[in-house]
Image (cartoon, rainbow, N blue to C red):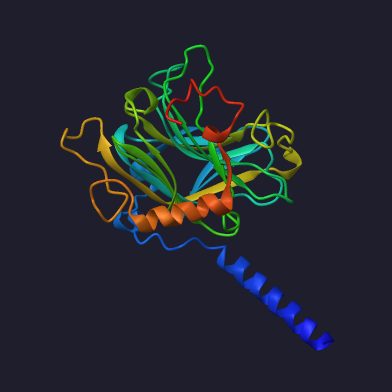
Length: 296
């Protein structure tokens, strides 16, 4: 009887280990938009914006870093009204509380205080906790310095400090889709003109100190005993419709349909991510004023 009980215990442990192993990887989405877009070198698509002394190109990999003196950022050569924008990124390991590593679209330089923005931001963390990937969409700043954000946050099914992984945003006239390794993790549809960014935006990347809010609402700050904090970018993807492109220009497709939207297989992969790795959704936050976010 004791041997039978031991057998059952071992079987349960094996089944639990097996289910945990399966849960670490999302279902195949069936379509890889990044593989259909040619990579560009950093110099082809971007320029330094600030912190040039904290930015270095090394055999196609852009290294930018933050220390107690400065962070660094870069900006696309062109301004876009739609497109696919991505990069393979490797994050800094260890203590990174207060440090933001980002890839985003914005027109803040054109419309200060009244800008649109689409964010992929990695919120720094402490060594005992995983990185949080924050996606965000801003629509027209309120003009008084207060921006209404639309944050959806995730943990990842891998350690983003161990290797490069592909992160991307597809922005069309009808939707915004965020991807991690070609897996769609969030779809933000255009439900009205008032809740969707329609004005052209530039593409940016940066690393900077956001100690006031980045890690557990500012509980943990950047600690410069661990400097420099280094973010590495490669395999840049930047294609779409620039402001001087033909009105007939169309951005790449997110799915095999070629006409926008996601396939059922892509939706299944996205739902898996939400079940296993979603940690915050602004639409489900009872503290939010939902009159400010009617799309929910």
